[in-house]
Amino acid sequence: MNNTVFLRVNGRDWGGWTSVRISAGIDRIARDFNVSITRQWPGGEDVPPVKNGDAVEVLIGDDLVITGWVEALPLRYDAQTIMTGIVGRSKTADLIDCSASPAQHNGKNLFLIASALARPFGVDVVDAGAPAAAVIEAQPEHGETVVDCLNRLLGQAQALAYDDERGRLVLGRPGSMKAATALVLGENILSCDTERSVR
Image 1 (cartoon, helix red, strand yellow):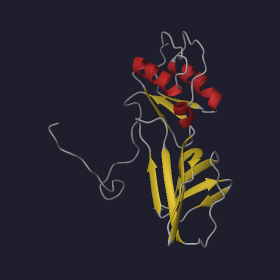
Image 2: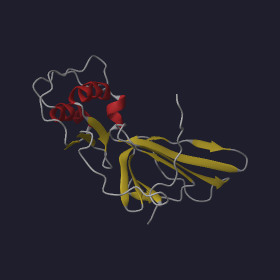
Image 3: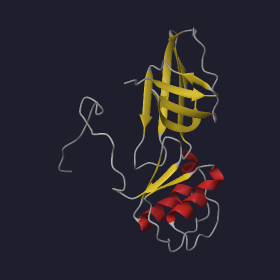
């Protein structure tokens, strides 16, 4: 199994990271990543020519896990070393950060409304078992983000929204899909930390 993490930016793959963090979950609309590399001062190899706003794909081996945007390029250094990094999120992050276009959505189902809300940001919506019944009324409030508007609708429809590896918004119901892979400690579960408390 190849667990090497690569970032594909501007048609070129970048690897060799000394620190990697990739986060995803069904309770989140946007996956995120943070990678960094530390070198001896003054540098040696090329620093990736990456800019904030560049399109990025994050791969673990041959598996695509995030399609999104570069959002930050942290740089830290001292007298001996320099650390450069790349931070970003899924394309669906625009739905978290940006206001929804004002429009009245009556008599449409969740998929059609979500598609209309996501369209201005170039985010595709995937129906993975979203309720087909019409939502009574949906109108974004002034200045309301797309995600805030969607969260109200998701509660009404008893549905979930999350992103996929291609940066698309996925709509579904709890239990509408089954995992294809068994969870096995030591193989795909590497660590666990839990608190067994009465609080």
